[in-house]
Image (cartoon, rainbow, N blue to C red; front, side, top):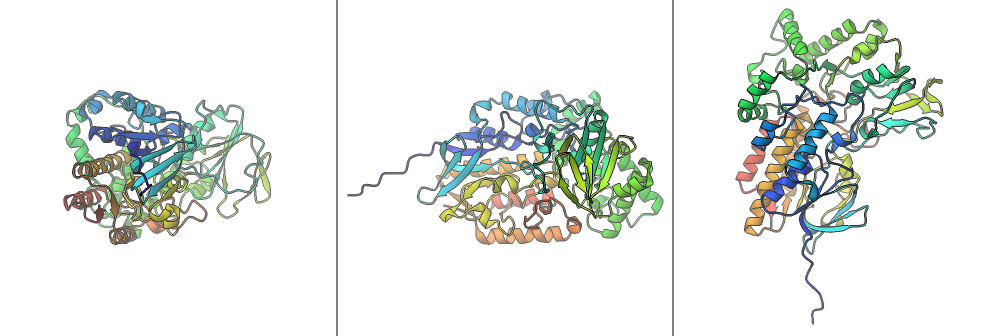
Length: 540
């Protein structure tokens, strides 16, 4: 007599981890094809990175008319943005609006962190466990954990000895921080530092910036949106977004950025080159690197752009020595180009000082300050603007196990392996939205998120229609894709410096270039795979 009992039915079709843009759209898309889904979210509200990153000056570097969802015509027509580059509070209001408009909150469990997700070979089901003690069985798990969501705290001796308050820009207090009358240390000079330092300096008695590597920044030239311009965009929003999806980065389709239409920076004379850089500088924003077609491919061409930015730093910063220390000598664009409002000019203030810790690193943090080369810089508060364990960090912090109990962290011990950035061999029915091996952080994230969610949705609908139980990336397809991503990266200058694209900001993390440059070619590949009955995936 067989005493075994049938495996219990799944509690839900999908478990979705994270309630940012990706998690919300995935929930909406799953419901749209008749699948049940639950979102598990560590925060008390929706928003993902925009829920946590509330530091002074937090703002998106993609224009608001493009940093928005385009899947619903009424949504994109009804919502009114106020500024060219949206602030964190405005983006969060927008995400709240999306959650309410599509009745998504009832599918989200807040204040709950996913601890583990294990695949059961016998039942082909996933069990997701939370810190609340709940175990949820599902057919599929979708990791919508975000590329920049796992805060990276530097391993500095004495970090926990400081007597005053410390903050990380990626986990800012929701009630805000008042630095009036305070001496503040800011450690790090990446995007969050560049955005926050000017505003902190307006409050604080003194700000000491500890810089290991200077960053390139271009001006935002932020301003209120022109109602007439907004109306023109909304009249042609579908084609406007389609043009953006045809660009390498997924935005700026209305600006001349097609490499085939642009000259090399080395083919024009000095006067023309400077004029074109000036035009991009005055326009503001990340399209500065689209002035010529070879800025991320030719070291000689790139150096003309780098020297242009350095000349702007020398023009803005009054102290030549400080200007020199703020001027990078690396490839411009190999690290994330920053978009700033008054960052360089802030170093002209009497209450702002710059400490270079590239040659003489921070010795330790003491009870009263930050010690460098034997001298203690006395401060009342410390801001760690030290970024994130990007792209893989949030996944590494969850105990994810596939076939045979294989831990994802073990499979990725030498660097992340995926097929299309969407799936990992050995982990059936597990999807990673904007995972490593996809364009993700090199694009307008909203465009990449929508493309991934819609691709996953279509695959799940196909599986549901024909009774397919599992989908899994093939080992060969995965290996070929990883080789392809590396080959594309090698053609560019992204390897020209130690960046978080490579994981270089996290001690012990494998140095592997994680995103894939080029959104249109990537989308075409995904469409080709789907049209070929999901070639490279095993459907069983």
